[in-house]
Length: 283
Ligand code: C2E
Ligand code: MG
Ligand code: MG
Ligand code: MG
Image 1 (cartoon, helix red, strand yellow):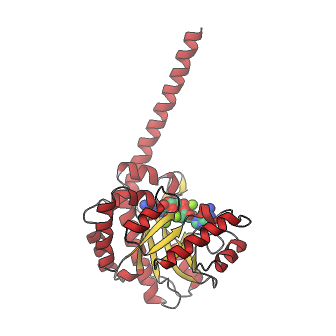
Image 2 (cartoon, protein in one colour):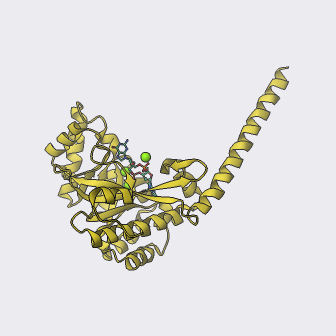
Image 3 (cartoon, helix red, strand yellow):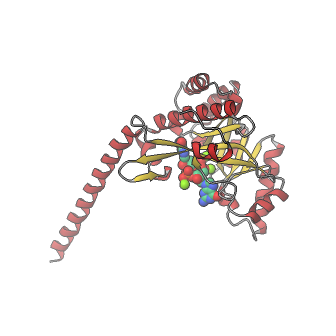
């Protein structure tokens, strides 16, 4: 009986694995079509000045309008896209769309337009030998100034091969594009990147902002990171600001830029535009 039970359990396990595999293959196939079917959406989240709260720039964040499951957050499809290499196409689409949108906004309403747009890049993308050309093409085709584009890379991405990464980032900076370290502080050797990798912007991970209020030790740490960034001539952005008390502390610490639900949630690019302007966007 014990043996049968074991066998049964194995069969249940096997069935479940089979189902999971099928659903993965299915999702992979649908994600592959998503770009071509026009199911990706460009969301923007404001990067605000501190303490005025005014929008200085915006971060481009992808969403997938899956006809079967509805609006998907990046966490539910970026890992699969990274494993399969589809992330390159997704990132390329977001890059173009973000450049196009911000350029159009700058043309129509320069007074309300974000001065820069930040786009996330995955590890696979950084490894593409023609990354700089891809970026140049996106800028040339949309007419956005390179100085208005920031590319965000996480520490884990930067960590892969410091020599290759540095060379590629130098190339990008030479054409005028800015580089940001995303989720700063969550990697293994944060100080090492600051020493070895050419960057312009440092984004303090939201785990350091979360719980800032009432935690003196964490406040000292964040304050020191802000000073360090400024000493190195970097623009420092605090991520994940959800409350006014956090913003008040960051203001005292001399932080100049912040991003978070308290300052503005990610929303469809066109909605953000329409909220801040009275003239409609052209298609
Ligand atoms: P990220 O680049 O660090 O982006 C910030 C994430 O934090 C976004 O999640 C944003 O919605 C969320 N967030 C912003 N403010 C707050 C806040 O106050 N509280 C909390 N709890 N969360 C906040 P999202 O849009 O779900 O994206 C998650 C991650 O997926 C991004 O983290 C980025 O690493 C990745 N991602 C998003 N879009 C793209 C893309 O187009 N390409 C690539 N390669 N990765 C992307
Ligand atoms: Mg989200
Ligand atoms: Mg980011
Ligand atoms: Mg981040």
